[in-house]
Length: 217
Image (tube, rainbow, N blue to C red):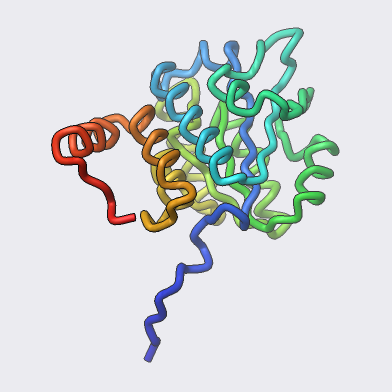
């Protein structure tokens, strides 16, 4: 008979147990992305970046052929990490660039969270490679996109079949916070939710404006 304990499960992400890799959120990649509209994609990328910054998550930013073809990383990410080195690659599979492996090993976390463009190439590649090498992989599905719904969905299915765990941008933010009593991150989590959380953010604005509500922190 299992015994309930007031503690989180080992498969939940927290601020210190994973590395976030944001991959190829670039103009040229976004132009052909059809599974999610550009405004929503940029919003979700901003939410993930702000969540990682707020909770001091180990984060790697990477682009492909930035100056010669694909353009700079979204400003929604760059503005959150102005001092972070962006690793520019030639490889479509991020995991095959030795500089990425070096950073991952230096950080030393066994969980990897991925977000980027396109799902079927630039996310499948590192996801399957990391899984093959024994890492736990999480894919922030709505901060990814592909050339069609079909391409995105088949890519997600392929990764899930091999053990990747899907999540959403808002889920990522709230899983890091997890307890409204964590006052040191409460205000920023609410601010990020209001700015990027869609209907949930509107609800927070309404509750706080009309009733002075809070989440019991």
